[in-house]
Amino acid sequence: MRARLTFTTTLVAAAVAIGLMVGTPAAADPHTSEAAIAERITPGIEYSTYTTSTSHGTARVHLLTVDLTEPGISLGLLNAGKVAKTGVMTSLADRVGAAAGVNGDFFNIGETGAPVGPAILNGTDLKGGVPGKQRHGPSLPPGTSNDDVFGVTDGGVPVVTSLAVDGKATGPDGAFELQGLNQYAITVNGVGVFDAEWGTASRKRATCGTDDDRKAPCSKRTREVEIVDGVVTRVATAPGSGQIAADATVLVAREDGVDHLAGLSEGDFVDVDYRLSSPDGATLTTAIGAMPIILDGGHLQLDDSSGTLAPRTAAGISADGTTVYLVVVDGRSSSSVGATLKSLAQIMTAVGSHDAVNFDGGGSTTLVARKPGNTSTSIRNSPSDGSQRAISTGLGVFYAG
Image (cartoon, rainbow, N blue to C red; front, top):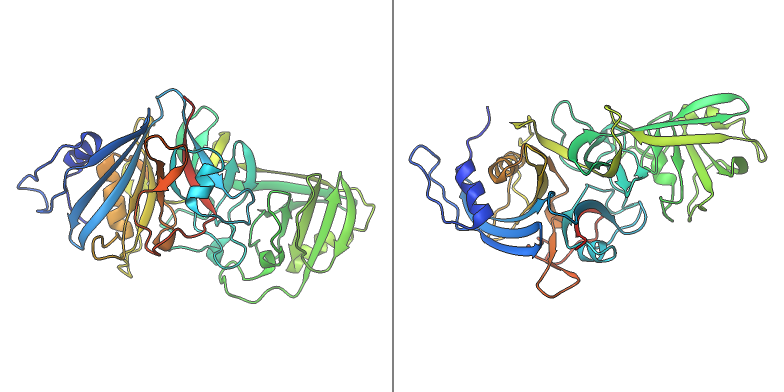
């Protein structure tokens, strides 16, 4: 059974949109929200903040309402320039001129810095989702996976969908499938591909842990093959590091996957083809790994067994697909207790979301937006670490006006 909303959905949504003080009908839960304070960032981007009283205590909500029908408005992935590289949210936004945005996917914190799920930047496939329990972040709802994303189609429509690596390498001894793209973990017995988008971080982490245990030891049987313009140029028994050239790809194998690379030698011709594909064949220009919490208006089965209250970040889509809601809930402070996954879903429904996803939370939770007269962004929420955390990705809002 879903927990009751701690405030009235339609009235709070109206308050957020137009800044009106609302009352609570007698039949509703007896908690109230203060009037929303609204600020126009650009045409099509509005920033609002309000405090709501919940059964857990007072929570401060920050909301970016994005009108996709406004000419010049678009959404895009933010990163630090490479998959395995991190940066603070203001720098991620400012390096590409975003007017506003929120932090994105969970990531391999303390190691490679690479995100958990798939990623597409301006139509370029950057990476695939890591296998099973290699994820960082809370347990997934039934029926969801590390392949799930918040995306934008080539027609500009926001969607919640999934992306899988569709890859194949063909060498002298035949073809074999590729199970990963620029991932900090590839499946046991698999072969993954890395290219220039990965960055300089070591590729060894891709052979560590297992599909069921992120902290399991690294594989003792590995192999790496570099291919430049279709020709093998280097073979090694262990994954390497350093920037991969723009005309090169690197195949990394673990356990039985090594058998596919064992027969390759320098000078052999190998054709490598890979892409990210969605179940319905849609072409996405933007994708960021995400955990679905609402689909088709219904709340998913969320694991709040720990009852964890924390800072949270989420993105939602209106039923008609014309509006995107980017939400941050402050937490771990005396002025804002944060949210559980279930209460986050309630907040996303309240602001108008028909579909919604959860992004990384805790110290990563950050919302940025330009202030009047500024061309750079400023932090608008209160990060629980006291300052910005270096993160892997964000979802940016752009205005070309």
